[in-house]
Image (spheres, rainbow, N blue to C red):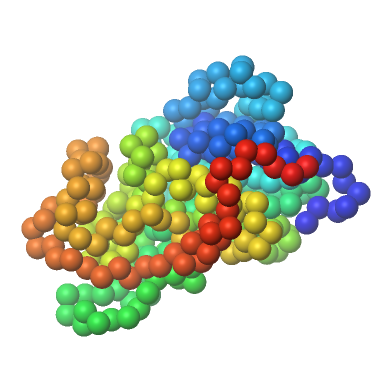
Amino acid sequence: MAPAFVERDRNCVCVMDASSRLGYSLVKRLLQRGYSVHAASYNHGACGGSLRKLAAGDGLRLKVLAADPFDYQSIVDAVRGCSGLFYTFDPPQGQTYDEFTVEVEVRAAHNALEACAQAETVERVVFTSSVTAVVWGGRRRSADDDDDDDRVVDERDWSEPNLCKRFKLWHALAKTLAERTAWALAMDRGVDMVAVNAGHPTDPELAVADLQYLDGARQMYDDGVLVTVDADYLVDAHVAAYESPAAYGRYLCFSNAVCRVHDAVKLAQALSPKSPSPPPSSDGLRAIRTRIQNKKLSKLMVEFDATRTEVEA
């Protein structure tokens, strides 16, 4: 929490990386709700030009700033004067997740949280993570397991880095280690942080940037933890996590659990051939009971007014 004597504008927030699909969607949503926004752009996303056009129409409340995940000072400059940070990270367009990308994402998360810890005005960080940082851990079900297994994945679960490395689940490893790094710094530096662990976006434009989420999709389906999220719901979940004083910890964010053969095939058809690891066809599939829950987020969203267009000063 920022000291009381520090002058701040509680209606001013920073979105990083605002040139990503999710970042750009957050910028637009926050402007609609009456916030002033520092749009920190890495300039390797698909929405850089759209951001500049948006700023041309609303230059009083939107500032587009250049940022670099490896340039600590640029991050400090971006969050200066802001009461909150919405942090997202995607690799540059055309770059897939690998061991190097994992290191990049971890370092970027470290720099962002360190900058927020040093910024006296920042009161809360909403950190975008992934369901893949949750589901690849613990006891994995096998074909011999009893269908009555009651184990349910929730916000307390973490993916296991060694398992992710073994099966080259680089997206899951990057999200897991980056989020763990952010939490370690937040707790050590006293930063109020909330994480949104998102399912695979159903919006085509968001999904393109997150295709490697689906590595291991067949196993996720068999485990009952393959989930997707509507783009608008994902954005509103971030805003709710920022605005609710009671928000804390991690929130699994998804709109639909893919547990029926029809749903799996439909998802595969929507993404293939773009996906490097599309969900399975109907061969050998059967309906699976959902083994993941997001009751914590559902409770938070009950009190969220998505139609609100102004924030309190």
